[in-house]
Amino acid sequence: MNVIEASVAHVEVLAHLHAEGFAQPWSLEAFENALSAPGAMALIAVDDAGEPIGFVSLRAGGGEAEVLTLVTRVQARRSGIAKALMVAAAEKLRRLQTTKIFLEVATDNTNAEALYLSIGFTIVGRRKAYYSRPDGEHVDALVMALEL
Image 1 (tube, one colour):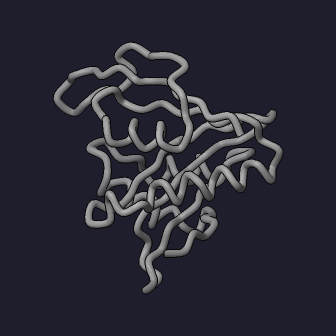
Image 2 (cartoon, helix red, strand yellow):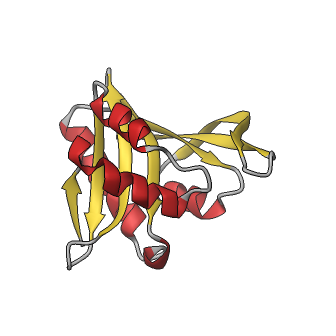
Image 3 (tube, rainbow, N blue to C red):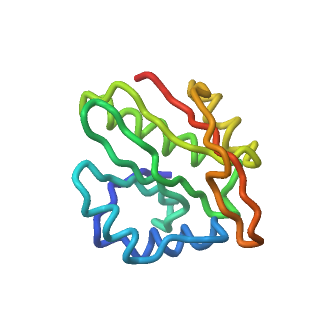
């Protein structure tokens, strides 16, 4: 597996991967806007054949960063790709003199929560009814932070 930097030229790949991983995926336009914003960046994990298998999208500025989204293809989950992407993102952010990374994770996404805790994130808050599900249910989000 290799990790490469994404650009606006990769929005179709990002949108496709996001649609595989989320019931309410971002649109091409959402990815174009996200990657065009100041401080925006994304890293894509590709397998040995060069096929995209996951990505992380972030926004950084003022010494802090926020993980906007992280996704791994279904067939590649639980194989360390998400962790490798987060570690690569943290290394890149350290080089940019970022000192803290924030993210939100749904309280019902226990696998993601465990991943972030294993990397060193801590729970610093909770957002009530932050995520809306396709069935109309609302789920709280844990706000997590990692000191770099």
